[in-house]
Length: 549
Image 1 (cartoon, rainbow, N blue to C red):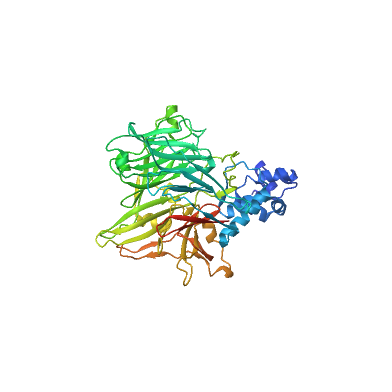
Image 2 (image 1 turned 90 degrees about the vertical axis):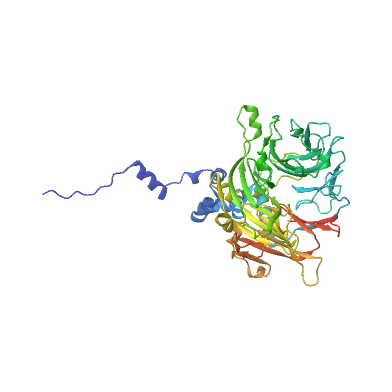
């Protein structure tokens, strides 16, 4: 009979390494200089960095003493990301600014308020990068000029005069200025004009410097001919133009009201004259569109169907690549209206995250310094404003649908998704008592709106911010703020004649109402400002108030 085997443990390199991690005799990481440890820890995802600081006393001491590490976790906590700029601003200043910025937006308490009189009244305008621009004229085509206002920021001297400048000569003789769009981070002004009658194309797209009105130095082709001329002259027809810019991509939708609806994209920094164009049979049904990134866009047609498209950078055509028309990857339906009702005037508005580093030096002093941080990309929302119209009784109603853009990027290729399968969980529906939000009423996670100012205040309104940052919903609201702040997680139920079935939407958000009432007709928003527009009875712009956060 044999003696039973005595169990033994065979030492191995793997076991030794694991034991060394659990019971280190001398932690090598902690023997490094603190500055180097901070650099190493900065590569951790924010969630892991926060956990490490909670379970290890040495890491916690380093974390608490490092503005850089705390800035990383604070950005993630607020759903923000570092902006693509090589800023030399110290991290402790960035951290302070981030906390003040978040606190002011959370409680809707601006740092300063500025009032600006508007002597010009134009039908075309734009608001981007802290610049407000307005053109003269009552309807397109616009005679010009364009006037630009550099709106104040939190770091500006409140007693310094506001900077303005004007572009007098917009286009060459023989054409008509139709619309424009700007990207101050690239000192870029894009204008679309009708071509002179003797040209063989309908439009000219101009790439100019926003500050000088000269051809943009980074645009090898500052004047691009677009759309071959067919049918009646454009001057004799109605025309609608929509322009979007994301990084080096310019996208334009044009409808001349007679023969042509065209959606095209090109790379304005490239010397390639190739223009990617949506197939005509699809473009003919497009009511509006918006760029979601520099390689994708969303369209909406007259029947309330959304189309998600991707495209190849047109600049690759010069390198021998096969550049095809935009490819429709998926379709998403909006709720079907009741008999006699139809969608009308659908507008999409979105602010994509840019990847191009802002200008490092602005010699003119007219543009703002690059932002320190921006909203993270994955949870941004899109604003869809539309009317419903009944031809029988001439009734109309105004609606807004807030959509989480992530659902489009996660869609199954070449799929058609009915509203019931995508809408309720990824949207929030609003019916408007007052005028619906305008194109610039959205930025990042936030939508700005207005509500009644109080009893007897018919011309004054309180501001309402609906913030769809999912991280805010996880934070409880202080009792002292409960009268004007709430987390909305219960569904919004829409039961109206315009739709045959009840509509429920569930996208959660936080709503904050301002304590102060303001005089305003429409409201706009960007990352650090709310702009209140005052208009007369004929809708002419008289002035704006700027709330700075």
